[in-house]
Length: 237
Image (cartoon, rainbow, N blue to C red; front, side):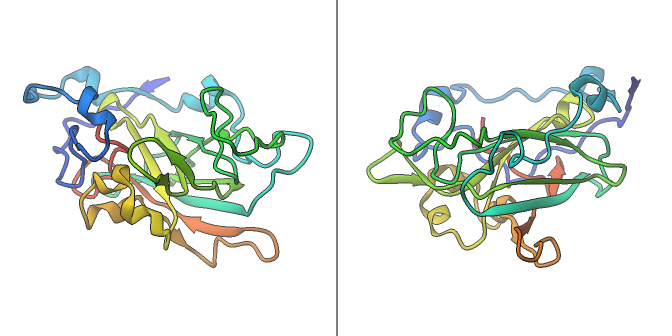
């Protein structure tokens, strides 16, 4: 295991959602009540373990459709992209954790009590490690929309959660990947907490080159850790 010493990072840009966004109800109780105190980056924020995740986490689970005896229901998809830093340099050997609802919009979590079927062939969790050029790729099914209790007739758009550990504590990122042309994005308070045009950084792009003939639709989602082009955090927390 080695250490990466990148120095300090630039501050986040206006694309990051506020911690308090009243339309997203839970931010009212969870957001700070006092202004944040800016402090200089310390060594523990700008360093971290490198080239270690594959050894610590074992084999990646890059195909969410082959974790059980049968194939899951739903539209099979391939998601690929690059993870880069604020200067556009690839971030290699970084773990990208994935979790999502199934094609009916139901999570396997016991607290998800929505009346939609669970899929015995789909857990909805996986992970992949970026290669030397910062590239990643995983296979899944397109998640369904689902209702939530934020407001009357509230529905979450189809989305995939992504968690990146990055090369340092300051590059930790948890975000959501949305699908292009989903009409629910425009009425979703979590997505709308990120102002336009920065919101588009969380919307994937349909890509025919990634699409595999007669098998799966392909989407590209590039992720930027920090800086002026940073991918926004998923809910401003």
